[in-house]
Length: 478
Ligand code: AMP
Ligand code: MG
Image (cartoon, rainbow, N blue to C red; front, top):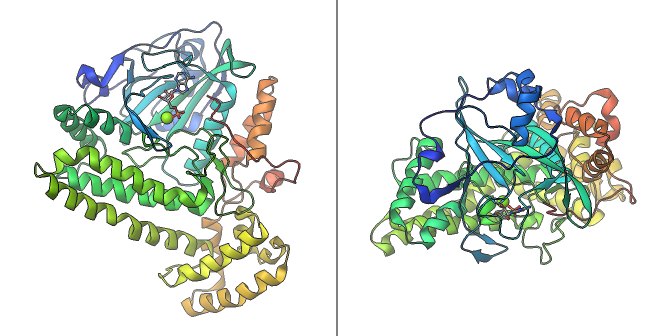
């Protein structure tokens, strides 16, 4: 089963970093899914996890040997408003694994019961968000995006009450770490410089071994986040709750709540029902990332330089590097989406021109890009003339780069997925699961494993929703 590391673990940090608490047992655990591929990558035997003993652990009814369960404390800005104390309110970290040849990872149960950080919540999750996170995080991984992973999902045999009575579930989340910007903010707001330094050393050892100073770590986090958000953008992904407690130091995507992939392209698209002012809209994500990183910078100022003015100056310079790094990553990724091997800054205009045309006609983001390689993109536009005008400029640019047609096609096919977890398909899987049918979930999960080379019998999953299939809103719904 799990063989947890005994050193360099979060549990060895000082007491004020967490509360030692185990998961709360549940009535009747049963398995929804174990991620066999991930289990093997982690050096685990999938059969161990699906055994009754394994399911008991995944549900929180038994602790694996060597577990040091805890709920971590953190703070954060939620929709811009400061919250001095959040923390794992429905999650318990069991311990860290060090798979052979791989980096150390956290094993966390999400939906594992109340903790001192639960505030008014029940510490539980219903099957909807568990399935959603499972599908979305595994899809992101298959798409090549740094992300937390889903190792397993189990039913608890207990009901949870949201607007109605729903089946309870627990997700086993795997992450390079759960260190958030909000974790640094928590100690900064307490003026606990010792803890900040300890957290910096821990983060450095886990993720940024070559950073020699806190400033260098900040620079590397900025680079990781610029790359990450550009990657999201290139796939039409909207995180939906980019609060500072939902942004990792590792550069992994975390906390799949109201997130969604766009169907029709609209630059200011918002899905989250609670995001009334569009703070976390598709086209706001880079700006929000910088805002969040500025909170990180401000939290670690005392570590950067004891002279505050000097610390502010170098931290600001590091933050100013976000925009050009994001822009370069954006151009590189969208350049590949239109078949360019080495897009240059001037190509941003050509790309933007296509996006504008898509936006004004509501063309499907994923399928329009995918169709470029097939020569059928014109069909994606309700007014084909809008595409034709762009097409000629695009072909001229490709000709100027001088790659052959096969290379261009290969570049585009590798940058433009055919299968994404479309909202209506995710909702369909959740609705079926609530009724006890997990077949749509398993089918979608299996299709999402090869997003760039869909199996022939998965054609229906590539299709954009019809008007009455379309899902316009998503919910935190924890
Ligand atoms: P989120 O926006 O989903 O990242 O959650 C924000 C905060 O609310 C975190 O501190 C969570 O632990 C807490 N939280 C969310 N759902 C629950 C729940 N069902 N019970 C207790 N705490 C929760
Ligand atoms: Mg969160």
